[in-house]
Amino acid sequence: MKLRSFFSIPTKKEIDPASPSHNAVDGALHKAYGRKKFFPKSYIKMHSKLHNLRTDVSYRSAHTPETGEIIKYAKQLSFYSRFVSGCIVEIDFPDILKDILEDNPDKIKDFSIDIYCPKTYSHHVRFTLWFPPFYLNIFNLKNLFKQMRQVLQRNHVKNHANYVAGLNSRLNQYEEMQLLMIDIDSLSVDVESRLSKIGGILLKSGRGYHFIGRKIISSRTEWTKELKGIMRDPSLRHRADKKHIRISLQRGYSTLRVTSSPAKPSRPMFFKEF
Image (cartoon, rainbow, N blue to C red; front, side, top):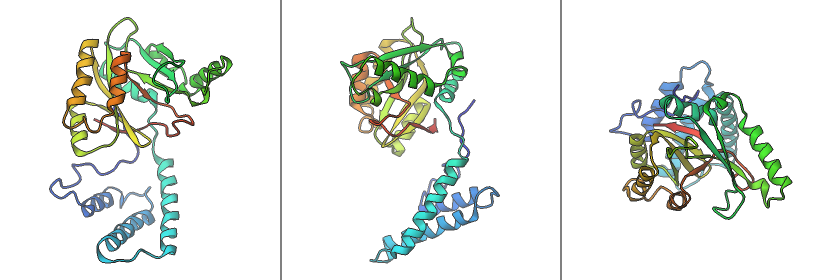
């Protein structure tokens, strides 16, 4: 299984790398969706108008567009956003783990999830749940997490509503195997190029990104070496969250959030695979 979504932005193969301009992206988008029956023509026209308007305001005029025009396009964009959201096939957390499992069928015997407070790195209640891969087809993460919050509430855990579930990098309860996980502040061409060499799945997590590598790291020593290498890597060291890496090294494993809470309102969503 390879992760896919209904819509995708034009790929590098569809855009001339020698001319990655706004016009090139605009042309590639029209070529990909302009003649699709399911894609409303009004949105294609809107994209062209907004692209031309952006050019006029940025380069050909010292004035902003009329307020009425901005309001009209804002409404159209709102409708467009709802349309796209209804068409996209959501790739959920179990799908991501199944994808990693497919690449490593003989190595993964258990996954693990942490229930924790995202505002506190230590000295707070924290649960770790281990489960074999066949449970991916059985349990519902949303229901499980709801029940875990009830346990926290019944035990009078402070700020239990802020708790989230996160994927734990550790694999197989009685072994040292781990997944490489990176909390990334922002993307660039260099970052994406480096991540593609590692191979894995990228999730959008509000203002930043979560990266989960496909490669199984066989020992704690190798895992530590990989994380320290990321902090020194010219492409990643200014983009990867060093605090997250340092805490991971101290704790002995990484955690990347997969659910939301009032403290972290944006649920991480599948963004791209490498």
